[in-house]
Image (cartoon, rainbow, N blue to C red; front, side, top):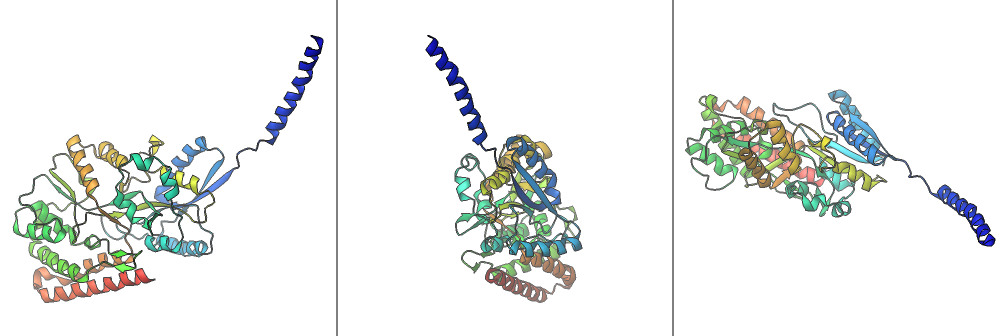
Length: 411
C-alpha cells in the first residue's frame, strides 16, 4: 500500500507540470485589424456593428476611414485614395454609396468609385462565393437575385448591394385600363388615352428620371452596350410631348413616385418599368471586400451584419436612407417606419419581388439626368410645339449617351 501511495504522490506533480507546460504552449488568439473605407452617413451603423463584434471576437479591431462630405475636400481626398489603392494599399472592407441624385436633384458628393462595374473588373474586390456557399443566410433568405446579378462579374459575386432606390406608381385606384404591354412605352400610351390621373402624374415626374428609362444599359462582362439610342430617343420625344401638352392641367395630379409616400389605402404599388419592361432599381449603398485583405472571411462576416439578423440593433441595415435590399429589413422598414397595414405591406413585398433589374448609376446616367433636365427647361416646347427641334435634341442626347456607354465599356 505504501508503494502505491508513493506512486500517486510522484504522479501528481508530474501531471501538474505537464499541464502547466501545455498551457504555456497554447497561443492566445492573434489580434488583427480590419480597415474600412466608408461614408460619414454610415459611420454610426458601422460602429454598432464594431461594438457587436467586439463582444463576439475580442481579438478583432476595426479601423474606420470616412470620406469627407465637403465637395472640394472630398475630391482631393478621393484622388489621393485612388492613387493609394492603385499602389496596392487598399482597404479590407468598402462600404460605399453610389448615390448621385437625391429626390430633389443632383448632389455634390461624387462617389469614390465612379463605376463599380469597372472596379470589379480591375480586381479591386475579392470574390465572395466561397463564403456565401457556407453561409445559410443565402439558403434561407428571399433576397432578390436581381441585386446580386448587378454585383457579379465572370459569374462570381464581388459586390453585395445593401440599399436601393426606385420609382413607384402609387395610386388609391385600380387600373382603369391595363397597358397592352408591361413596359414604359405602353404605360405612356395608356396615360395618354385614359383618365388615370395617377398614371398621368407618373410621366410628369418621370421625364426627369431618364437614368431609369433603359437598363441594364451595358454588359461589362461581354463588353457590349445594350442601350438602344433609337428607342430611347423615341421615348424622350413621346414623354416630352406628353409633359409639354399637360403641364398646365397637371397641378392636381399626384406626381409623387417616392417609396416614402407609401401609405394605407393604396391599391397600386408598383415599381415603374423601363422601355424594355424591366422593373428597375438603382443600387445606392453597397459593400465589398478588398482583394488585398488578409482576413477575407472575417471581412465578409462583418459585411453580412448589414444583411443578416445577427443583431437587432442593425435592423435598418447600413442606412436609413434608401430601401434595404434584404427582404426582412425591407419589410421592417415599412412596418416600423412607415407603419402600414398588412394589406399594404403585402403590396410592397410583391413590388420588391417584382424587381428584375438592378444597376449601378455611372457618369452616363448623371449625364442623362442633366441633359434631359436642361433640354426640358430650355426647350419650352409647351409653348413652341416645335417637335422637330425636340426630336433633334433627343437624338443628340441619345447619341452622346451611346458614345459614353461605349467608352465606359472599353476603358
